[in-house]
Length: 72
Image (cartoon, rainbow, N blue to C red; front, side, top):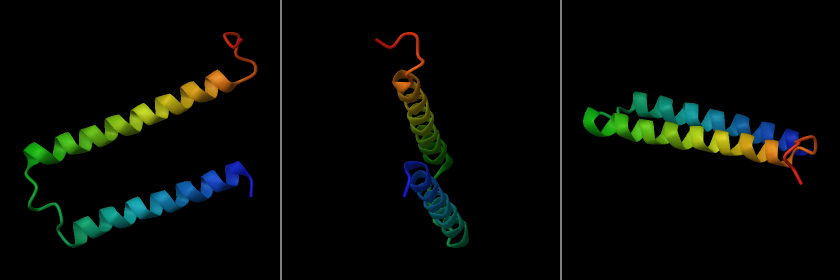
């Protein structure tokens, strides 16, 4: 299997797992005991980690591009 195919499968599995976890948390009221003072900072930390990983991935992709003029 190609790397693109494998990444697509991982993306689908991850998306379905995230959706399932979100649905389960709403269905079973898992977040009712967490106050808003804790919930939103936790969500923002997760968003910040995701944004940092995305930027890092773009940076690595740009750095490994053979057409990059800054590459030695």
